[in-house]
Image (tube, rainbow, N blue to C red; front, side, top):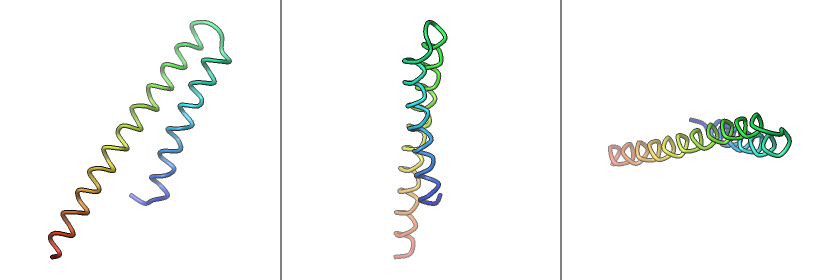
Length: 69
């Protein structure tokens, strides 16, 4: 995964979180609450998955370095 793609992925997660907060503030009632929960939930889940992906990719790089030695 390229650095640019990684940064873009985390940026999208941040935008989803911001959109969730904006929906909570701008859309009144239950609709705003539901939108906020959904958007913030998706953002949090995607960010967690990206962090685990980063950890896995780091381990793969370490293994490859060990194999080259």
